[in-house]
Length: 209
Image (cartoon, rainbow, N blue to C red; front, side):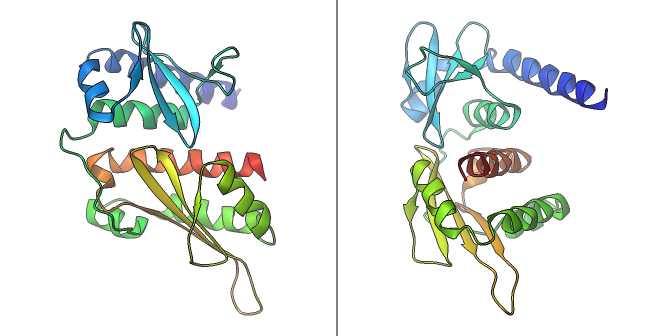
Protein backbone atom coordinates (compact mmCIF):
# COMPACT_ATOMS: atom_id res chain seq x y z
CA UNK A 1 0.00 0.00 0.00
CA UNK A 2 2.84 2.40 0.83
CA UNK A 3 4.38 1.90 -2.63
CA UNK A 4 1.03 2.59 -4.29
CA UNK A 5 0.60 5.81 -2.30
CA UNK A 6 4.12 6.99 -3.12
CA UNK A 7 3.66 6.19 -6.79
CA UNK A 8 0.41 8.13 -6.78
CA UNK A 9 2.17 11.13 -5.23
CA UNK A 10 4.91 10.97 -7.85
CA UNK A 11 2.33 10.93 -10.64
CA UNK A 12 0.49 13.86 -9.09
CA UNK A 13 3.72 15.86 -8.95
CA UNK A 14 4.56 15.01 -12.57
CA UNK A 15 1.07 16.07 -13.67
CA UNK A 16 1.36 19.27 -11.66
CA UNK A 17 4.69 20.12 -13.27
CA UNK A 18 3.28 19.39 -16.73
CA UNK A 19 0.69 22.10 -16.08
CA UNK A 20 3.46 24.46 -14.92
CA UNK A 21 5.45 23.73 -18.09
CA UNK A 22 2.51 24.81 -20.25
CA UNK A 23 2.59 28.26 -18.66
CA UNK A 24 6.10 28.99 -19.94
CA UNK A 25 7.26 30.39 -23.27
CA UNK A 26 8.13 27.34 -25.38
CA UNK A 27 9.68 29.44 -28.14
CA UNK A 28 12.14 30.78 -25.59
CA UNK A 29 13.07 27.21 -24.61
CA UNK A 30 13.65 26.36 -28.25
CA UNK A 31 15.91 29.37 -28.80
CA UNK A 32 17.84 28.98 -25.55
CA UNK A 33 18.76 25.33 -26.06
CA UNK A 34 18.38 25.06 -29.85
CA UNK A 35 15.79 22.31 -29.42
CA UNK A 36 14.44 20.28 -32.27
CA UNK A 37 10.68 20.76 -32.41
CA UNK A 38 7.53 20.46 -34.44
CA UNK A 39 3.92 21.52 -33.89
CA UNK A 40 3.30 18.78 -31.33
CA UNK A 41 6.56 18.25 -29.44
CA UNK A 42 9.81 19.69 -28.16
CA UNK A 43 12.69 17.19 -28.40
CA UNK A 44 15.57 16.98 -25.94
CA UNK A 45 18.25 14.41 -25.15
CA UNK A 46 19.18 13.43 -21.59
CA UNK A 47 22.10 11.04 -21.10
CA UNK A 48 21.91 10.23 -24.82
CA UNK A 49 18.27 9.12 -24.57
CA UNK A 50 15.78 11.01 -26.77
CA UNK A 51 12.81 12.57 -24.99
CA UNK A 52 9.86 14.52 -26.30
CA UNK A 53 7.67 16.98 -24.41
CA UNK A 54 4.09 17.41 -25.57
CA UNK A 55 3.40 21.06 -26.37
CA UNK A 56 -0.29 20.47 -25.63
CA UNK A 57 -0.24 18.41 -22.40
CA UNK A 58 3.33 18.73 -21.13
CA UNK A 59 3.73 14.95 -20.87
CA UNK A 60 7.28 13.67 -21.33
CA UNK A 61 8.04 10.40 -23.12
CA UNK A 62 11.24 8.70 -24.23
CA UNK A 63 12.12 6.27 -26.97
CA UNK A 64 15.12 4.49 -28.42
CA UNK A 65 13.60 3.64 -31.80
CA UNK A 66 12.56 7.00 -33.19
CA UNK A 67 9.36 7.06 -31.10
CA UNK A 68 7.91 4.02 -32.80
CA UNK A 69 7.78 2.64 -29.26
CA UNK A 70 7.03 5.22 -26.58
CA UNK A 71 7.74 5.03 -22.85
CA UNK A 72 6.50 7.41 -20.17
CA UNK A 73 9.44 9.22 -18.57
CA UNK A 74 10.22 8.43 -14.94
CA UNK A 75 10.00 10.86 -12.07
CA UNK A 76 13.67 11.87 -11.79
CA UNK A 77 14.28 12.65 -15.44
CA UNK A 78 10.87 14.30 -15.78
CA UNK A 79 11.51 16.71 -12.93
CA UNK A 80 15.01 17.45 -14.26
CA UNK A 81 13.80 18.21 -17.78
CA UNK A 82 10.94 20.43 -16.58
CA UNK A 83 13.24 22.43 -14.31
CA UNK A 84 15.88 22.99 -16.99
CA UNK A 85 13.34 24.05 -19.59
CA UNK A 86 11.28 26.26 -17.30
CA UNK A 87 13.63 27.61 -14.63
CA UNK A 88 17.07 27.96 -16.21
CA UNK A 89 18.42 31.49 -16.40
CA UNK A 90 18.20 33.25 -19.75
CA UNK A 91 21.97 33.76 -19.79
CA UNK A 92 22.91 30.31 -18.48
CA UNK A 93 26.34 29.18 -19.63
CA UNK A 94 29.05 26.76 -18.53
CA UNK A 95 31.94 27.85 -16.32
CA UNK A 96 34.13 25.00 -17.57
CA UNK A 97 35.09 24.10 -14.00
CA UNK A 98 34.04 20.97 -12.13
CA UNK A 99 32.91 21.32 -8.51
CA UNK A 100 31.85 18.87 -5.82
CA UNK A 101 28.26 18.40 -4.76
CA UNK A 102 29.41 19.24 -1.24
CA UNK A 103 30.48 22.73 -2.29
CA UNK A 104 27.12 23.46 -3.92
CA UNK A 105 25.08 22.18 -1.02
CA UNK A 106 27.16 23.94 1.60
CA UNK A 107 26.59 27.22 -0.25
CA UNK A 108 22.85 26.59 -0.49
CA UNK A 109 22.54 25.37 3.08
CA UNK A 110 21.23 21.93 2.15
CA UNK A 111 21.82 18.56 3.75
CA UNK A 112 24.03 16.01 2.02
CA UNK A 113 23.08 13.06 4.23
CA UNK A 114 20.80 11.42 1.66
CA UNK A 115 23.06 12.23 -1.27
CA UNK A 116 26.22 10.91 0.41
CA UNK A 117 24.34 7.76 1.32
CA UNK A 118 23.36 7.32 -2.35
CA UNK A 119 26.95 7.74 -3.56
CA UNK A 120 28.34 5.38 -0.92
CA UNK A 121 25.72 2.76 -1.73
CA UNK A 122 26.36 3.11 -5.47
CA UNK A 123 30.12 2.84 -4.96
CA UNK A 124 29.58 -0.50 -3.23
CA UNK A 125 27.42 -1.69 -6.14
CA UNK A 126 30.11 -0.70 -8.65
CA UNK A 127 32.90 -2.28 -6.56
CA UNK A 128 34.92 -4.74 -8.62
CA UNK A 129 33.03 -3.70 -11.77
CA UNK A 130 35.26 -0.94 -13.10
CA UNK A 131 35.25 -2.29 -16.65
CA UNK A 132 31.46 -2.72 -16.68
CA UNK A 133 31.00 0.80 -15.27
CA UNK A 134 33.29 2.20 -17.96
CA UNK A 135 31.32 0.46 -20.70
CA UNK A 136 28.06 1.75 -19.21
CA UNK A 137 29.40 5.31 -19.18
CA UNK A 138 30.45 4.98 -22.81
CA UNK A 139 26.95 3.77 -23.73
CA UNK A 140 25.65 7.01 -22.20
CA UNK A 141 27.95 9.02 -24.45
CA UNK A 142 30.67 9.46 -21.85
CA UNK A 143 34.14 10.78 -22.70
CA UNK A 144 36.92 9.10 -20.73
CA UNK A 145 38.92 11.31 -18.36
CA UNK A 146 42.26 10.68 -16.66
CA UNK A 147 41.13 10.44 -13.06
CA UNK A 148 40.45 7.58 -10.67
CA UNK A 149 39.83 4.04 -11.94
CA UNK A 150 36.91 5.13 -14.12
CA UNK A 151 36.12 8.76 -14.90
CA UNK A 152 33.82 10.08 -17.61
CA UNK A 153 32.37 13.37 -18.74
CA UNK A 154 28.72 12.55 -19.47
CA UNK A 155 26.18 14.57 -21.47
CA UNK A 156 23.43 15.06 -18.91
CA UNK A 157 22.07 17.29 -21.66
CA UNK A 158 23.89 18.22 -24.89
CA UNK A 159 24.47 21.65 -23.38
CA UNK A 160 25.17 20.54 -19.78
CA UNK A 161 27.81 17.89 -18.98
CA UNK A 162 28.41 16.17 -15.65
CA UNK A 163 31.48 14.25 -14.43
CA UNK A 164 31.55 10.82 -12.77
CA UNK A 165 34.68 9.61 -10.98
CA UNK A 166 35.02 6.13 -9.45
CA UNK A 167 37.78 4.60 -7.38
CA UNK A 168 37.60 0.87 -6.76
CA UNK A 169 38.39 -0.53 -3.32
CA UNK A 170 41.89 -1.64 -2.33
CA UNK A 171 43.60 -2.91 0.82
CA UNK A 172 43.33 0.47 2.52
CA UNK A 173 40.22 2.23 1.20
CA UNK A 174 36.65 1.26 0.27
CA UNK A 175 35.21 1.99 -3.17
CA UNK A 176 34.42 5.68 -3.70
CA UNK A 177 32.20 7.58 -6.13
CA UNK A 178 32.07 11.29 -6.94
CA UNK A 179 29.63 13.22 -9.12
CA UNK A 180 30.96 16.60 -10.24
CA UNK A 181 28.71 19.16 -11.96
CA UNK A 182 29.80 22.33 -13.71
CA UNK A 183 30.29 25.28 -11.38
CA UNK A 184 27.37 27.08 -13.05
CA UNK A 185 24.95 24.15 -12.86
CA UNK A 186 22.59 26.14 -10.62
CA UNK A 187 22.04 28.54 -13.52
CA UNK A 188 20.37 25.61 -15.27
CA UNK A 189 18.37 24.03 -12.44
CA UNK A 190 17.52 24.38 -8.77
CA UNK A 191 19.94 22.66 -6.43
CA UNK A 192 17.19 20.28 -5.23
CA UNK A 193 16.65 19.24 -8.85
CA UNK A 194 20.33 18.43 -9.27
CA UNK A 195 19.79 15.40 -7.05
CA UNK A 196 16.96 14.18 -9.29
CA UNK A 197 19.51 14.30 -12.12
CA UNK A 198 22.10 12.42 -10.04
CA UNK A 199 19.57 9.74 -9.07
CA UNK A 200 18.61 9.36 -12.74
CA UNK A 201 22.27 9.00 -13.77
CA UNK A 202 22.92 6.33 -11.13
CA UNK A 203 19.77 4.44 -12.11
CA UNK A 204 20.78 4.43 -15.78
CA UNK A 205 24.24 3.12 -14.94
CA UNK A 206 22.89 0.40 -12.66
CA UNK A 207 20.53 -0.73 -15.39
CA UNK A 208 23.41 -1.01 -17.88
CA UNK A 209 25.81 -2.91 -15.61
